[in-house]
Image (cartoon, rainbow, N blue to C red; front, side, top):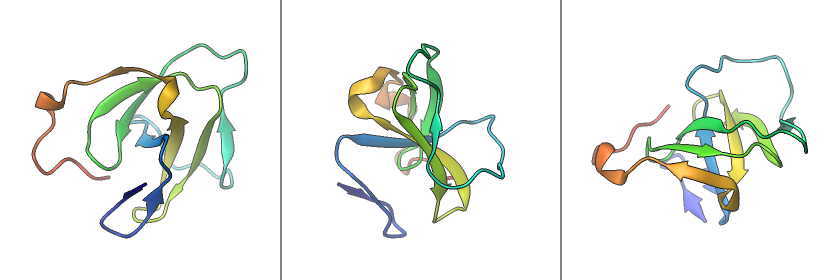
Length: 96
């Protein structure tokens, strides 16, 4: 499990990121992203490290990240299909 500096925990086997172009929506918590047949990759930025990654949207969940109040998307790590090299991320990472 990973814990943010504000104490919010991410269960092991999951990764949480925000879509850079996404804006706040009126939808409630835990709104599913994509469908079973969806095959477009989600471009996301990890909320803990600022590292970019891409994941298949099937089974992903959208919710509000409590430390920032902004919408984020949680995906299973097994659904990540590409990831930015760590050398591109600063020592401190980037938070929302």
